[in-house]
Image (tube, rainbow, N blue to C red; front, side):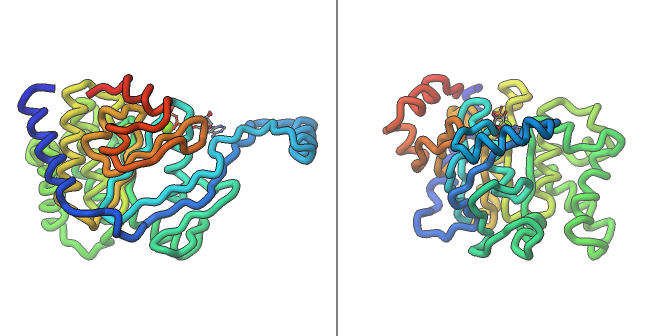
Amino acid sequence: MTERQHKAVHETEHEIHSRGDLASRQPVLEMNHVSKSYRARGMSLRLLNDVFHASSTGRRTDSLALHDVSLSLKAGECLAIIGESGSGKTTATRIMLGLLAPTAGSVLYQGKPAPMHSPAWNRLRHESSMIFQNPYSSLDPRWTVRQSLNEAVSLRFGRSLDPDSVEARSIQTLDTVGLDGRIMLDRYPIDLSGGQAQRVAIARAIIDEPEILLADEPMSAVDMTARVQILHTLQKIRALQGSSLSMMFVSHDIGMVQHIADRIVVLKHGRVVEQAPCDELLNHPQQPYTMELLKAASL
Ligand SMILES: Nc1ncnc2c1ncn2[C@@H]1O[C@H](COP(=O)(O)OP(=O)(O)OP(=O)(O)O)[C@@H](O)[C@H]1O
Ligand SMILES: [Mg+2]
């Protein structure tokens, strides 16, 4: 990180964290005692019988990705979920956002149970957005940046916005993520660098003003300079949106999340090993596993 980038990241970090006490805020999204097991694909009937027999006799043969996990996301907070590969981060966040059904336990959105296809689930799906590790997976290669952004706006607002307002909104959102709309709007994903593509994907995710934004390893596919730009972009979005946007940030790297998260949850083998406010976890980690993650931190 250059000195200038370092200063920008730290200044915005300070601005976000000096906004007051999050402890008193209500959770917007909660996951209570959630477990998730995946069944192996293409299992034969005989194997299924064996699994059934094993579970009825107390032996486990299915793959349990989450064990009794409870998490909550408060209004305006950034919750980071960290852990090594396979620890259950993506599974946990997909269940939180209603993309995957839990095997046991429940999800509540704005205090209402949100099982799949319920009214609360419909609202949650409508009011949340995601950013993935690979930005090209959320951008259609046949569409220009303009078409990608326009589609996100029409999905949210229907035909209620005229074309000039949609264009103005696209340019303004690209400006928020640090890209020049006049240059970017007519480009195709193939004409963007990895960092630019990820910032367009972020613009697409925030253009419809979601209540909840999930970023699942948004920086792991790009180089360090682009990582810092993306981190700074996400910080800026938090600073602009205040308590109207709650964010979940998934990473295996505690070094990245420390600049944006209010609270950190550490997952290992599908269990929560530790969760605490960011500063507390960084300065007084309680678990050896958290200490190992701190030693491996990048920034
Ligand atoms: N569709 C699936 N079918 C079977 N097992 C799965 C499936 N998805 C995930 N798993 C298993 O569940 C466990 C948790 O996976 P998950 O993708 O949630 O981990 P992660 O922490 O996001 O990992 P990474 O950092 O590599 O993205 C892993 O053991 C994984 O192999
Ligand atoms: Mg994952």
